[in-house]
Image 1 (cartoon, rainbow, N blue to C red):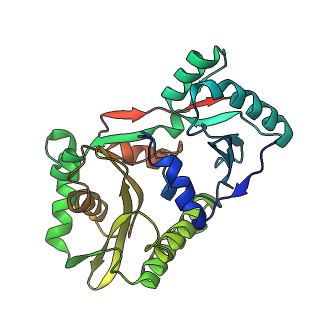
Image 2 (image 1 turned 30 degrees about the horizontal axis):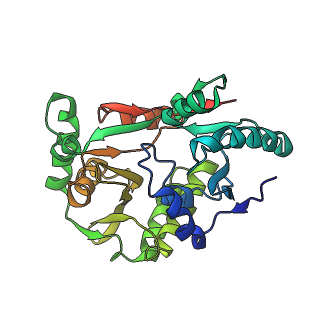
Length: 295
């Protein structure tokens, strides 16, 4: 059986050798994503015959494997059978989750396996043209442009590269915004911890970011990374909700400053949360990265 190891920062070099050669469309297969959520999702990995396999728990507490990475077509049937056996051994809830469509095609082509497939709508990634997030032009984004203009006209602000911002000040600001909500759920607490770890290890991880200051106090921060020549992912976007127009400013400014050279921006999933879905839909995505479950 497979010997799984908890994911840690020192695993980055090894895992990047598997992750970076593939142009994944979803946010799941970035080391930074995995690092942020390593504790919340109990992420572990094993390497079997040169193939990388992740074991993970979703935010509903259900366990599954992510899609194997680096397999050859002649290995896939064996790996599929092995993971079915591991699922029984570990008493896992699903066989696979976080699957992209290309993996399902490989299962059909190389394994001749018929399986039940479930579309995981709550886990679809939202994809936007970077040009529209920068320009905020057109009727559909008119409200966002107004919010942006409202912020720049009414507040004294400046922007710093996240690596130049004071780390402790950033972390304290995130905690302040988090606990202003009252009793935050576990997902938000884990996210705050992930932000803490990103900032403390910023010299060892591949991401860009900005911090926005209003009246010399940090008011927002955002972090993301360029995955390939076509796409960047926004991993984190946090702001003081009491400052009108700040989220629109952060969204536009970050893409404009750091990702204007890529065509599309992945703003990750909404996890089925009504408020988050409404916010992501308000920026008018032009497509989704669909993800699937094999139960």
